[in-house]
Length: 289
Image 1 (cartoon, helix red, strand yellow):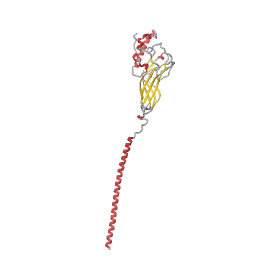
Image 2: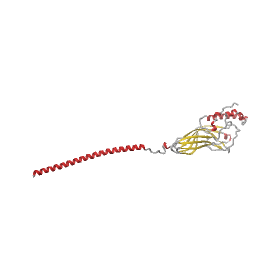
Image 3: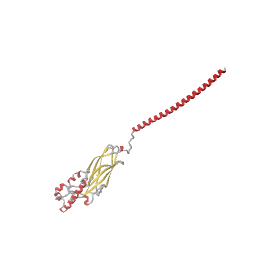
Image 4: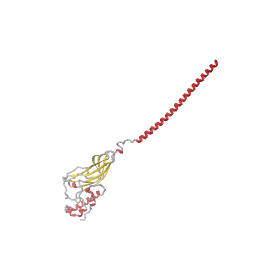
């Protein structure tokens, strides 16, 4: 009996030790498993984050934000479609028709063009006085104007404009120029300006360069009365019939001087009204009679 109890006690002790050892082994395996799962989770998370960042980055590249109001893509872009010029002249009621610049524009941009100013930079200016004292002119009064009668090169004349040109649209408007009629003999003067015309629009847009324009005010100078041309040189009797003999030398000096002044301003390549288109080749600078 004693031996049997001793064996039973030893077996019970071994079983308890084995259970404790198995328990420690299970805990060790569980700890390693948890550690492995934690490491795996971190790696998976890193991979998922990397994929997500890559996707978002790709989508960000594909999405183009709308242009801001001040960007170039939203700016207007004006182009000159056509320019026509009409000289001023004396009207039947004694008034003066202004010089007219008829401007046609295209807006090829995506923003509205707000034109607020027409800027005329004077390049050259000449005064052409009346030579034939018996010219048939009438008094027309005085006009207020933005064109000076004693202009200097580089002088700037601004004409207020309030005009809108819609995107992908067209527009047309006139710039009217006048000059005051002076008193005495000076009221018969003709003034010629070579100006560089710009249109100012929007705040950040470059001015539209329209080009150089020849302006004659308040009316175009007439051949024979203001200058010498080939026709009057070939028909001296037309001059002698309207100029007193005593005044003929002064008339000749005046006509030749005016012809040279007109040559100086008409020789440039500038847009001009029909009244000035054929003057230059017909000018003459000396009398042979």
